[in-house]
Length: 115
Length: 110
Image (tube, rainbow over all chains, first blue to last red; front, side, top):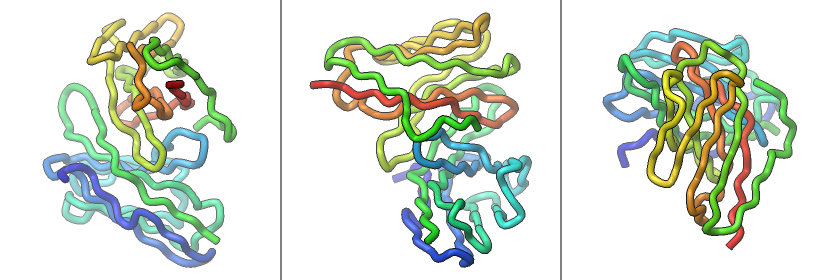
């Protein structure tokens, strides 16, 4: 399967713990995005990378959240000192930067439950 | 994003009929629009897109209409099938950032 993959698919953690999620984009895609989706709502943009550079961060991304894409391939999203309000589906998407459209391909997501 | 509560708008359609899902967007600077389909437990899947210099685009069984005057987007699905049951989101693209609208749940009645 050459689509976007995310790991783990599900994560249950206790409040106050740190969690890290991984995203592997489609191999030739140079842009990588993180979104958060809560029940009944559309995905909300968190941040995106072009190659290894993090170009934009949403105000939703508090200082407990950090994302990296060290070699311009896979990315990690870490949440420190998790809170119950962090419970959501975390989606990763990738795209190939062109002068035209920005078609993003989404992964299956990581569902986080904070107890 | 907007707060839309836990209850998505729902459209129920008989199998074989055409479906029309509507969406209003807010930013007149948006230059690219996308429709996504999201099935339960999966990430959004690209269906069709349209640039702001177009008012209609057709794909296989799907058509997107864009009315920039009233900032309205619609997705038409011809001959709706049970596999079309999902939540559909419109999204607007502004400078590489995609903003999703309110989803619509499509239920296909066999």
